[in-house]
Image (tube, rainbow, N blue to C red; front, side):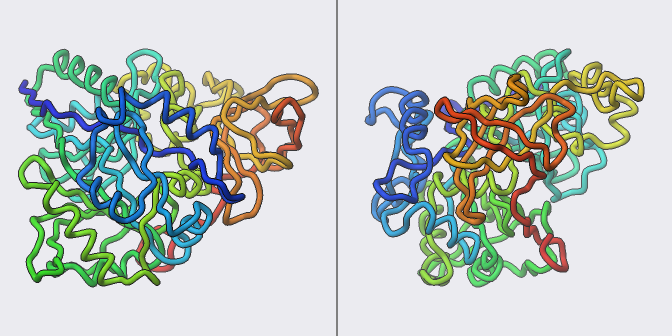
Length: 441
């Protein structure tokens, strides 16, 4: 068993709540400022910088300290709502370089990942990606959620949440030590990671591809290596382009490997080429504020809020990440807890006592921590909430006592000491538009 870790770690959260702006379109300004202070490490001079830091400053990025990084929450040319709508209608670029990128390789890499997650990696197709969760032994609680791509026979590319860097590093290090097989682990620190999201993202990306790639055949959950054309006529090093994202729209995540190539020198020219070729009518920069409202409309979880160490995949509505074979054989951390939860008590299983649900909330928006009541009894809690720019109403995500999760169930959500009407609804809140080869789905 071999392990290798770069010393210059890059940390940060997957998503940030909305920005403090002095216009009606700001979402959760106070919540943002509180999180920024809580998660920042040291003074502004201590903050880490992504490869796009100077680019953000030059282009009007409103930078905030978050989890040790200086990150753009929005840009001066668009309000949060405008940025949100632009992404839904055209395409936006997000700097997500604070996410932690890993490589696991070796003949036992699949077995190692299958010990820590409930997914099947042995039969995963090469250059295919899927969501999974790293789990704690026994309890089946979620250590972190992750997207994993199989790059080759024995090589896996893993993206985890930057906010979980220290915890994940300790967890993976300890698990590798106990596993003892042929697995090499490296972290791609100092790398760039950019999300291109929106209905025009494929059109925009196709115009800067230097490689012969047919994006119409690169479906959601698939990846490809390609080079990008720069404005001066040169090309980037090979970048990993994965079709997917965190907004519910068609889109791509582009990884600029900083371990084997100078990502700090190549990421900015690539982004400049995309923006220049597309023009502002098709492509804009977007920050983490819009990303939060976009992901919540798409019903996507944010670790540390909608998921944590005490939440199992079944409680979180993520049972679909556990394929039939793994339900039968188990062998993953927490299987003794999770597999019985898949069957309700009425059918001989243990079931779960709480479930993740979506809500429409009347009146003031419900924020994280707001209690959910029914008939005067507390039956749940809100974990995320924003005014939805797309729907024009307040949406929220939370956990509710089992038996109350049916769509249409009416509850009370306590917001600022007042009970507001809440209605349980299915998620996602909007129609997702992932490219699967025909109509977006």
